[in-house]
Picture 1 (tube, one colour):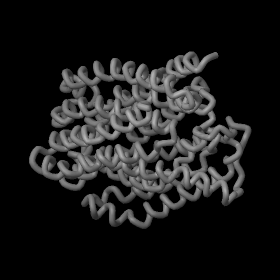
Picture 2: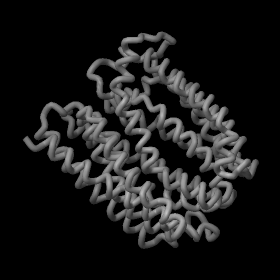
Picture 3: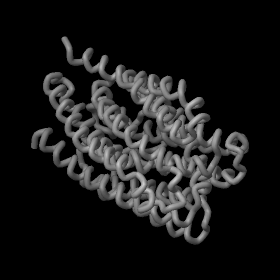
Length: 406
């Protein structure tokens, strides 16, 4: 089977996975939004922001590296697992040490117990078998559908049941912890090739050297997509953050999922054909046009029917998020197109392009987020996100021309 047919088959399975995740996610949010208040969602959001920040700052790029490598995954398996465990342990310790300061920063002592459980999530995730990446590397998307879909469903069920019992945002964190523990166990049951606690310094050095741009790109990507959340949480408080985060999630959910499906599939395919630049160029242009034809209608529908979506999914108490939802629907379209280009540059081992693009996004959003949020509240933060996306675009255009114009 040729790469085009493999890609088409992969898109079908990953599309099914993303559709499943979107469906479960909407049901999960709809139920939780009627159990928990916007303020409680905001408190949960504080803990996620810290976890995401530390994961971004310590991103090693192991998965990207393993997919890029022509050699078999097993060659770097032990070293990748040791690095992953060390990273998870470090994140957990930092969260535990900084939890009081984080609560003080967000003026929310209620976030402390959530942070303590969040540290356990980081620690447990570190033990996941790196062989998981072989699903994507070997284009085995049917197996990934079953694996990831089951984990996401488990997380949703745990969150809903615990939220109903506890009526507390910590229920959502416990759900994440349960899913992480199951993923670790499943990754060792499903994959017969299992890592050992063996450290090969030369291989670790190779992974880290190759991953330094991924670390930078991951950090900048996190800041680009979360600096508005951090500012909203700090300036406006937990309830506005809860409103903003759910508006962000709804507005970008369809468009980001479509983009993620194609990125997941096209990245390993691009890696296989990166030696044929003309073929690679045609594949990328076709993929980008297909993504645009899908995300644009989704984004416009969210923009046009924002009020109806909020009432349907979240309920009347969440209507203050309507203005931000409209603006973020446009942002979702921009960000999906940006992200679709990243798989191209990663396949060419040009991680620096991704990092610089995200850096420009940070500069754009960073220059406007404070004044716009102070003046216009949630809508101002959403406008700043769009400005950041516009700042990122020239980097992609310039480097695309460099790669394919000779």
